[in-house]
Picture 1 (cartoon, rainbow, N blue to C red):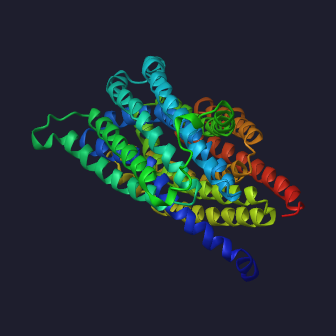
Picture 2: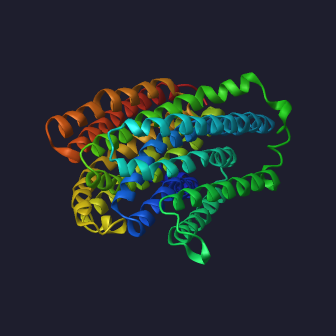
Picture 3: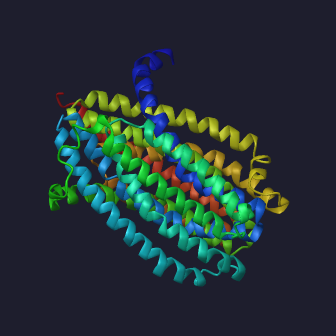
Length: 453
């Protein structure tokens, strides 16, 4: 163990230095929905919390599609920076901004005309659906400023500047919580808004974050040499295709996983509002650790992209393996917390004892799938940095939709194990994904490591 640590120590340090701000920034996306769940669970009630669960299950698919598309910029920026092609970074930013802005509008249209329409046909409680619709519409509109924020965030992080997005996310979440409480309680003469309160607070928060992040990147001296060719005339079909060629498969990877969990939430909703609320509690906690692991994954993408761009393939493999070590250690810790505090953590969200009882059992399962969830998301990040996105996309589809969700349906609905059975199926899907992605990375990295630097 000592020799292993000495071998990877420099990579642990450099990866953590880059990853920690990204982890906190990534966590911000989930904390927005966590704050919504806490505020609604305590101040409005169990039915409203079930509505939040339903909306988050639907909107999370839209969210990860947007985030995945925006990720198409990061490895390209990292690779060009590794080649010292600085002006090309500004050109890529111009193309990414257009792609993400258009994607944000299209995703909102999808929510407005698609999700709001199908929500009536998901066999959910009528009262849950009634409360869910206005919240879903507001969240849907917030994807537009979020995509603008993600454009500049991924540009800065691709160049190794990760702390600024972290600080903006921290203050944004504090602002979101304050606004949510003001709106839901009707403070300062404002009429109480119920579940719509957290929708408005999220929309306002994401708009301000987009403006602040854009101003920082465009005015900071850190990016002056990179932005020399940031202009409308730099938009080209070839660059846009290169970004989409990575971003679209990444969006599909996230969509396959998250939609499987969203499908699980809808299946659990057919069992009852209490089970659905319990699922929301457990999945919120699991989502926080997942987003933190995806921060490690994002840092791995940047480091891998830099090494790939400079053709230092031995360092690429060592850095990637150190990211696997880091995420495994982190997820082991969170697994112990979930299992040890499974009766306590649900109280953060609700005081309904029936919800807490079911959520506590789900957290034990979540504790086990933490390890697989962390390793698979790092595997995706490393392969993304190498430009390998198509085969990993196929792997995620097989793992979640051919194995995970069908097994979950069989155990949870057909066999009658309820929410726990559905979660067992999802755990199996994560295990398959983690294993196949690591084998893919191991094969590719060993092959290219034989090439000269």
